[in-house]
Image (cartoon, rainbow, N blue to C red; front, side, top):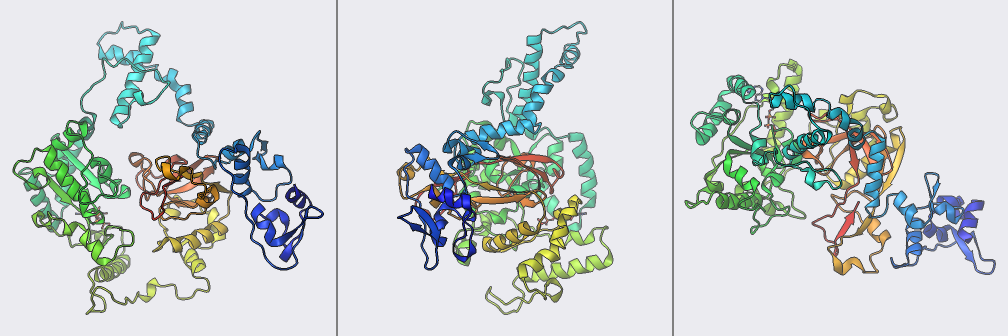
Amino acid sequence: MAWLTLNRKNTVGKNGKRARELLYAEIPAYFTWDGTNKQWKKRSRGFSLGRINYVPRKMEDEYYLRVLLNIFRGPTSFDDIKTFNGVVYQSYKEACFARGILDDDQVFIDGLIEANSLARPEQVWLKTCHLLSEDIETKKREEYNNPELTLTEAQIINYIFQEIEMIMLFNGGTLKDIAHLPQPSREDIDNSNRLIVDEMRYDRVYLEEKHVEWVQMLTTEQRSIYDEITGAVFKDLDAAAVRSRGQVVLNVASSGIASLLLEGGRTAHSRFAIPLNPDEYSVCKIKPKSDLAKLIKEASLIIWDEAPMMSKFCFESLDKILSDIMKNRDNKVFGGKVVVFGGDFRQVLPVINGAGRAEIVMSSLNALYLWDHCKVLKLTKNMRLLSDKLSVDEAKDIQKISDWLLAVGDGRINEPNDGEAVIDIPEELLITEAENPVAAICKEIYGDPTEMHKNNDPKFFQKRPILAPTNDDVNPINHYMLQHLQGEERIYLSADSIDPTDSDSLNNPVITLDFLNNIKLSGLPHHALRLKIGLPVMLLRNIDPKGGLCNGTRLQITQLANHIVEAKVITGDKSGDIVLILSINLTPSDTKLPFKMRRR
Ligand SMILES: Nc1ncnc2c1ncn2[C@@H]1O[C@H](COP(=O)(O)OP(=O)(O)OP(=O)(O)O)[C@@H](O)[C@H]1O
């Protein structure tokens, strides 16, 4: 009560700090408690740390009040604490839900309702189901070659759902997974292996034409590699050619963003069900008689791009499962399949927490027990320099940088060296005058930050990333950019909890909510996520790789709602698409924490 009174008067405390600027726990640092008059008074000297007593979760009202006290500044009444966006909630718990800071399905429910109000698919479905039915009768008349055919309403609805089911099956889903939706009769639905059908859905005529065109463009170097690979698969076919003849090629990449560049590309982890943190005993989780096993058995060629960034255990798991699926009695590597790994060892190698150089090298692709069976084919010509869109000067500049990068990558700088050398960065790549380094980098890349919001060119952000070596460097840059970018801002607070699978820690009174909120881990966003409309952001999770939303996709924020963020894709072939991003549960798998936490 005394705190609320202090806020009502907005009393000035030590160092001129106003009561309303402070959290409940910060009050003792600026005010002292006058026990006789039961009120807070301005602190004249000294310092005191505030603390809010622990409350067990079963004392519901007090528990949620404590959660709110940790984030709420300057309330003047208890109703004020229960208020969010102008609505006074019945309880502290509901106020917490409304703020999206509790780990409960209510967040998802509200998110979906909100998506609906933004005119998203659910609403579209309700509005368009009668439109979808319009041409079903005509379509079926043609299909059955019966111009007199008349369908009942139930038949029409059934056909619509059958069509939807077909589309969902092609995309790896099924209506069976969606509760409360009518289910179609499954008589006419093709039960063949969807994964194989999907891989054979390529436009063979188009591929045949492209194949002729692309082969003509190949350089001598590329041609010899092309011949080598196609020679291994069939006598005279390549990937497009293999597909154009109705064979299966599995295109995978180590990262989601690299997979987007491949036709029909998937991440290697998702395509081959490779465990997330594989070790020497790991095997891909594929059941021998499953559709996926049959698809892999069918494959004539597997292409794996950016392979050097994966741990060798991923390739070992693939070797073991291929051997199993192919019933490999001759002990051929990868079950006798042709596997093409693409990549550059100068680029990113496997990322292993806390590992040194030796450990990283030992877990790389070329430390694989099968490496001796791999044939190394080299592409040395920089094709980017031959682009006809480049002027002579631009090509010269790129040539210079690319030669220098190659020298760094090959360890040819400051020779002799033992792998560690001082590298002189060319003068023209440096920003030499900077009082505030972060401000100087941001200005160099994005121009005057206060003018940035006026820039409507979608390519502006697409072409301008700032790369930082560590997360510690990322934070000040993000902070600076957010501070200077104009636009409506929102702070999203995460809902943190102990993962239900860690039953030992679930009731541990020491692990309080505010303790979880303060945890900062790499790969996990901070508890408070600041966003602004117009802000360029990068997605760090593979949410929908097929739809272009994966780790590395760059987006620009367009709307900020309570539980959902609307953004425009600014990179890749989905560029320009508007997407909705809902909060999702993240459980860091590899942490030094003695308990398993979840953040949403
Ligand atoms: N024979 C060719 N004729 C014309 N353009 C080509 C040819 N080969 C490659 N290119 C072009 O060169 C560019 C670079 O090719 P690509 O992205 O395949 O290289 P990469 O080695 O995979 O690059 P990274 O190291 O980033 O993975 C692309 O724009 C590609 O279209």
